[in-house]
Length: 242
Ligand code: DCP
Image (cartoon, rainbow, N blue to C red):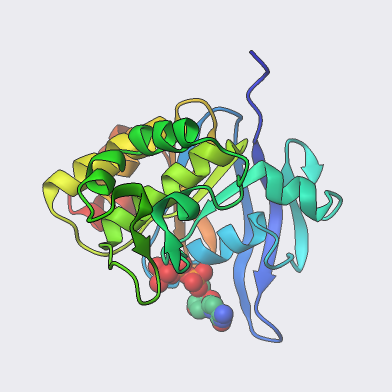
């Protein structure tokens, strides 16, 4: 098997928007290839800003963002987009069939590959329960899907594209416990063989992470495993009231 890739490193990253103040003030963070790391913190702590830098939607004022040891500013756009699967909070579904939405970015995929990805992402069952199954038209003016269903479609999309790194901005919307468990299994399938950086809003996601980074005021305030951070009794323990 090829080596697992997708390691991420931020070195002394300072960042702010336009001519506004610094939002990130000297961030150092490493996600080794193959691991799943969670980023948590209260609103405005800089979690989304961190993801923007990894995706190169923005560049830092100072410091470096590295993907597999290369500064993302030196990677071509095709290499960067090919290496990273991005699942945003607001999953983009276009007006088309479920199948076409799943194969977005992988138009060459066979029906078997599409369905296998959907199975892994825990999306197959709800898709087959739709009026026309995989041929059901969704998106604008199509069948409406719940937030949890949309996120699982996006995870299946990521499985099909097989990126080295998954960058996930977890949805904040509340879901029932059954959906939560399905999303959890889906996430486990996507992260099993690759690197993942997740802005986590669910306790179940952070519990499963190899390492948790707690951002506060644009800095890493705490880092460690769930048990270590609960034991420390700091910001993390307060966030989840555990
Ligand atoms: N900010 C800004 N302009 C933007 C986006 C954000 O000035 N286009 C500011 C608002 C916050 C800070 O940057 O003070 C950090 O914002 P983030 O969105 O990075 O913070 P979080 O992702 O942690 O917050 P949330 O959990 O609310 O998404």
